[in-house]
Image (cartoon, rainbow, N blue to C red; front, side, top):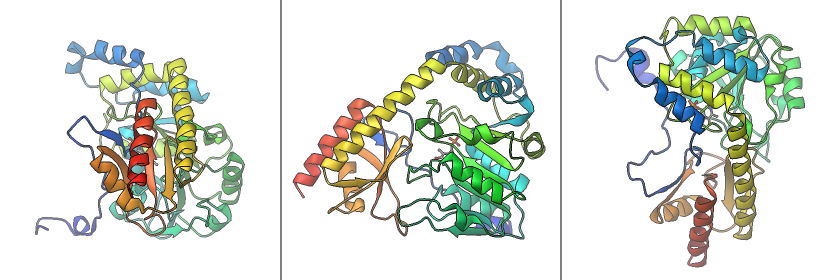
Length: 354
Ligand SMILES: *Cc1c(COP(=O)(O)O)cnc(C)c1O
């Protein structure tokens, strides 16, 4: 508290990121980072950019990256927006599209940054409960709104909404913007990017942080109708015209172009996820069917809170949310094959000695 804070700063309830421990010998399965390194081509492109050119500002339009993304998704460059992580892209979207007079709709169990942005941009919110199986029922979203936002696959459940349902949702909600936050789309769900040319109110947001192993680089992007992108550009150019630095632009371009590496790492994670789900089940866990790079799971006997603490004692960190409906679940990031094995053997010990 300070008397110098503006009235709105007093009311903010900021996002609390998962722990980023300083010690390195921990098995870190708490923030859904990729266990594998970024594409070697991305690393060398970034090294090559590290030098004299850093005297100069980066391209405010990041055209090289927009062009690479447009090619990748078979869209035009003016249907692509890029930002400093998808969190920034989401923030600009809240400011660009959502008004104060009607509520923004999002699932009750969802990415916890959405209510934070509602606070920052003074957007009313209405949380729509997931059903008992933790699925989104699109019919529940058929009500007056200033917009709709949800992650697909959802976080922290990992459950995917089929493209057909997204189409139905868009068909019944033509007058406000629908944002599909596809942070985890590359681990097994169908992207709504293919619908961008059919619905002028659809914005698809993706990130390089998860499937491209570049969480530390901070690059995210949005795909949508050129008028939506135009709105985002207006906000961005009223805030920070250079959200992506030169190194980030080069690294992201090389990463998006290295399809072979990308597909191989995603496949490895999918295989580990399926293996880990199976092993967890043998240990007495019930897991939701995940289309993401994490597993949302609960043990039949032991409480999630206690398990997370015991894992922590074994130097493994997973995510525990002390929130209604999900306070007996753990969200476990799918690590490397070795990390998954270590997790299973630690859990075995914990469970046997309980
Ligand atoms: C990780 C995540 C993001 C943020 O990604 P950045 O691009 O690193 O800012 C956005 N939405 C969801 C649902 C996420 O899990």
